Image 1: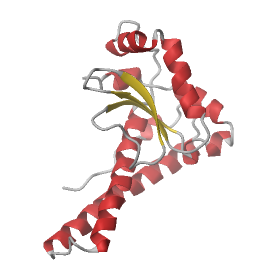
Image 2: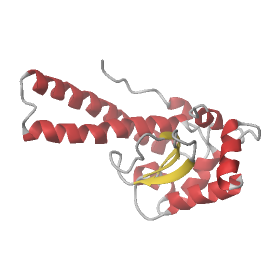
Image 3: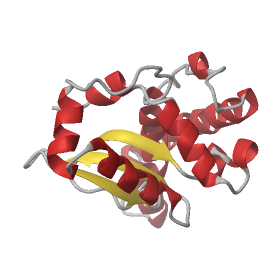
Length: 192
């Protein structure tokens, strides 16, 4: 069963994100979907041919994490965008954030500060299902740094491709645009 790239063209016209930036980003995402399928197909053939003990098989297994997480993180990211409404004051997500961080402003300040750090990667608000705790994490690479068992709620791409075309080195301006476009209903639906 192959993965199919989802259509996020509804995001074109979103304030703070140029059509060029979004189309380039969609193309990058489609590459992750294509490569996930390719790696899975090749691994399947190698397993059927008894080549699981080869260095090539091992490297493809490692590569699968990069391609798959690149695909899935972009899906979470795009699905977190396109919102026009503020976070509902009565939503379960808002209540959890306030309980954990004291208020929305403190959580947002921490999330923004994490995104503004030097480097490339992802900022992810995770929910730890073991105790319900919410934690803002920095993830350097698609395939490393994810807290085991935690559920991603809000994902912000801070690789250069997500903002450089529109904002150059002004990552803070990109973060501002990101926050103006969060689809809080989509983010809140990821809570369990």
